[in-house]
Image (cartoon, rainbow, N blue to C red; front, side, top):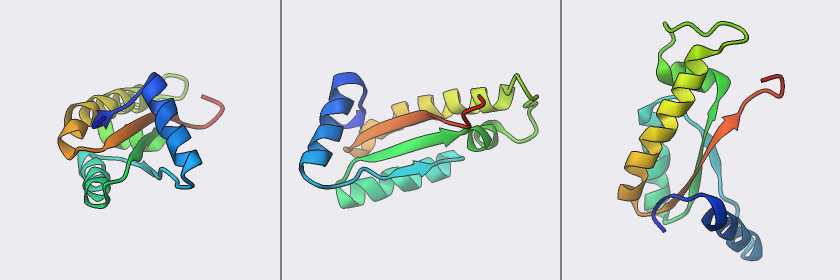
Length: 109
């Protein structure tokens, strides 16, 4: 399935990768440009990819001038949500399976 895969489809994709001895790379994205670069590479290689959003990368995605107070992390949350929405919208056009990992943050969060 092209686009973002979740649930049983995501588990099936991981199982296929394990059974066939290949990895699904994960890339920490901080902008639409970096998301597009990962999707373009996946399309060119006809391989699934994982796009992940970290605390700092998500804040950058939303805009570094936004507040990101300790304990609230407004920009980090907004950026992770916006990034996930963006990837979900554009990923099907690239014709590859994509996993979105929006919990790539420090354990303290």
